[in-house]
Image 1: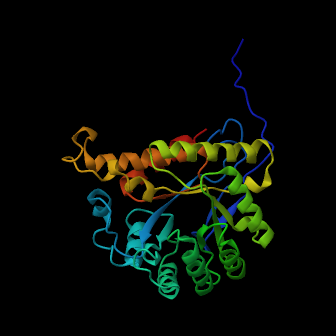
Image 2: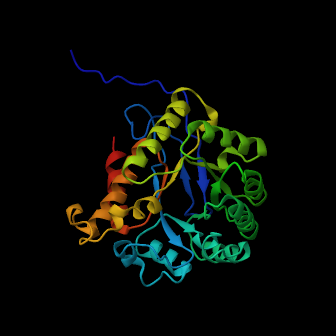
Image 3: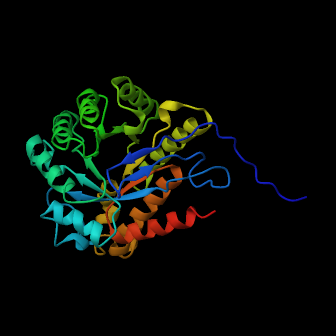
Length: 315
């Protein structure tokens, strides 16, 4: 008797969201099965990788992560262009770390000017990520949305305490919003409902479940993402049927295991390979949990993950 693969009957579908404008616009979502379960459903749009760019030279990056970008870290536009021209980036994530009130505390006007300069200098979709200070992000992202009217940015993180302010900017100036919740499926659904009630169309919402780096923290992220996809695809929960973005590079490269030198941690092996592999493995786990967009840093890690995506999407 021949073996028959048991199959799940999916009743839901992940909503499609188009990021950016023009010929290099990217559509994500649209899946009708669990990630890469191509024997059970369709995955019309493979996951995408966004390369991150900082709006100010990073001070805490290990040498391995900094090396590919040493010549451009003082210029976000040049940095973004290098990611595209040299490393083939399909999307760029501009991290507005300089707006952090506990750091440089740059103004919303300064941040918006930088975003506008980068957005008009590249031909791929631009994701704009705030400092994760909810109050400051509300001010900054609202100004960014206004200054970049019609450029179809992806702005976030949008949280419950600033969703009205940032969401209104997304609606009024035609941008996608990143709904960010702290590794909790119920809070994620609640925020999606709030954004929908505010008037943001489903085609302008991407979900950030909050991402941990490789290790203890990622187990929580994986579990929440897994439950999210179960509810979206097998329980017809329409307020969880959104594409997922994972801002993972920051979380991976800030860990001591990724930053420690060979002298500090001789048992952990080659420090140049260590961080790259940690980023690639973290990204792969998130792909298997359901990520549609990965925010990554090192070109070698990105190369490994691109190969993995290519292998997994083959039927």
